[in-house]
Amino acid sequence: MLRRLVALMASVFLGLVWVVGCGGSGAGSGSAGAPLPRSGGKAVLLNGAGATFPYPLYSRWMDEYSRLTPNVRINYQSIGSGGGIEQISKRVIDFGASDAPLTDEMLKKMPGEILHIPTVLGAVSITYNLPGIKDPVKFSPDVLADIFLGRITKWDDPRIVALNPGLRLPSKSIVVVHRSDGSGTTNMFTDYLSKISPAWKEQVGMGTSVNWPVGVGAKGSEGVSRQLQSTTGAIGYVELSYALLNNLPYALIQNRAGKFVAPSLETTTAAAAGAASSMPDDLRVSIVNAPGENAYPIAGFTYILVFKEQADPDKGRALAKFLWWAVHDGERMAPPLAYGPLPPEVLSKVEQKLKSMTAQGQPLLAGP
Image (cartoon, rainbow, N blue to C red; front, side, top):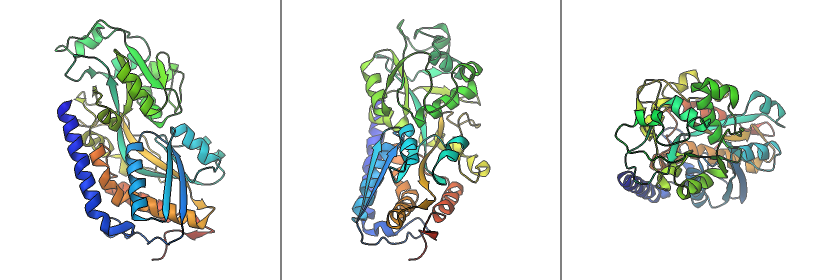
């Protein structure tokens, strides 16, 4: 774990070096061949809210973009995907954020056409608090589901021991920790459990908020991380970045190919490898339990939600430009925080979505 933490700190340092080195390019540059229209001088405040899953990255994006574009200030509240969806539906924020794509029913109830803008890939890590256990604990899909169903209640249960013959697991009760708020991270995790466990699918199902069979709730990934740190014997789920930043160990999960894999930039990218070719036009897609020997099974895209037609031209233009910068220049900040940048095939689809944003019927990214 210490080695991983040191590697993370080194990566973050390199990311910061990049930020300082690239500051002179300003907010007017995108990736190769994709120039970002220059910002005007009018002061604009953008308000967003939603997913905690990408918050470590989004907070850096917004700080850096405001530094590069002083007339634009971006306020983002990490309140969970459910809160972000609710607030964007009421038009009280300029953009929402969710790891869970909106359902068809949700989209019908929106007061305008919503665009799903994938920003990065992330992994949901299974974390735990077992002092003295230095090597990662391994879980098969059925064992993991039965822990969260409350069917396996002790760490030295024979089924867990059989997967971890080299570990001296304690005879201690398992304390399940889950999100208490509406969460895209929960949606991704319960999507996975529904795909690998018929019992989970029938009894609990998937969603941003579910009726958990067992466990204690905590608000946000921050709250789950704190609860895990303070509860010996606990097990829970948080975005990989939170596990790394809070020095939480994370499990190896058996994937569809039968391999035990850790959440990482490489294994998350492997899970997304086939997503671009089958991605629908609206970009809503699930990649949990993906095929591939190196694919981590609890991974997915996280989304920014925006109205296609923007009510305020100045705000709409500033928002479109920020998102263009984020999925181009901003992507370079993703790997140091264990998020996967968008594959090129997906990025080209995102560019078309951003170019479709309008105000008063006029494209927001048109012109110099």
